[in-house]
Length: 278
Ligand SMILES: Nc1nc2c(ncn2[C@@H]2O[C@H](COP(=O)(O)OP(=O)(O)OP(=O)(O)O)[C@@H](O)[C@H]2O)c(=O)[nH]1
Ligand SMILES: [Mg+2]
Image (cartoon, rainbow, N blue to C red):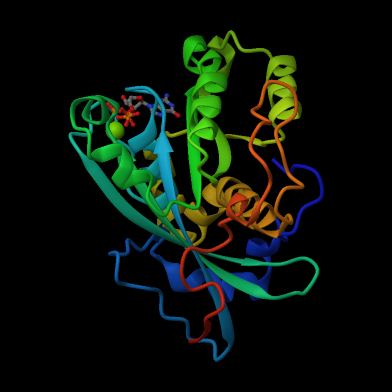
C-alpha cells in the first residue's frame, strides 16, 4: 500500500498511544457515524491539527462508489446495486501520526458520491461535486476491464478543465482479483506513468462468524480499514506537501498547463491551520 516514501506512520493504529485516539471513533467494534457538523470527542488533552478535505468520487455506474464510501465511513456496505439518485455526502474522521514531526493530525474526509446516471441526467450535479474539492477519487473495478481502461480518459479530461485536483485511483472488488483481467504489470505501469498510487478495496461486509470477534475486539473494524484509510490520507497529505508544479503526470498525462499556485489546493479546504484543542 505504501508508495514512495511515506509521511504517515502506517502501524501507529496498533500502538497503545494510537488506540487511545482510535477509541474515540469506535463503539463496540464498529466506527461511529458522524453527521456533517459533528466531530469526535477525544478524552486526551492534546492539541490536534484538523486537515479537512472534500473528496469527489467518480467512476462508472456499479463500479462500487457508494460501497467504497460505506466502507470508508464505517457504514454497512450495500450488497446489491441501488443506483445513487443524486448526491450523497458523508464524513469519516481518521487520526494519523506523521513520521517526521511526530504530530498527530485528525483527518476529516468529506465524501461526495453521486450516481453516474444522475450526473448524466442533471447538469448541476457535476459542478456541485467538483466545486472546492481537494481531490478526485477515480474508481475502477478489478472485475470490469473497461472501467480500468477508461481511467486515462477520465483523468485527462479532468486535467484539461484546468482544475487542480489531487488524483487518487482506487480499484474496487479486489476480493475478486482472481477473476481480474488486469495484470499487476499494467497496474504498475499506470502508477509509474501517472505518478499516482492505486489503492485497493474489498467492499465486503464482515462474515457472520466474525460477529463474536467484533463484539470482543473494539478495534476489529479499525484494523480492517486502517491500510486503506492510511493509504488515502498519505496520498492527500503527500500531494499537499509537494511544492506547486513539481508534481506532474509523466507519459500520457497532460503537460500543457503551466505550474502555478492553483496546482495544489490540498492538503486542506478550510481548517488545516486550526489547532483544535480536544
Ligand atoms: N464483491 C464485491 N462487490 C462489490 C465491491 N464494491 C462494490 N460491490 C458491489 O457492486 C455493486 C454496485 O455497487 P455501488 O456501490 O452501488 O455502485 P455505484 O458505483 O455507487 O453505482 P451508481 O450509484 O449507480 O453510480 C453492489 O452490488 C456492491 O455490493 C467489492 O469490493 N467487492
Ligand atoms: Mg452509488
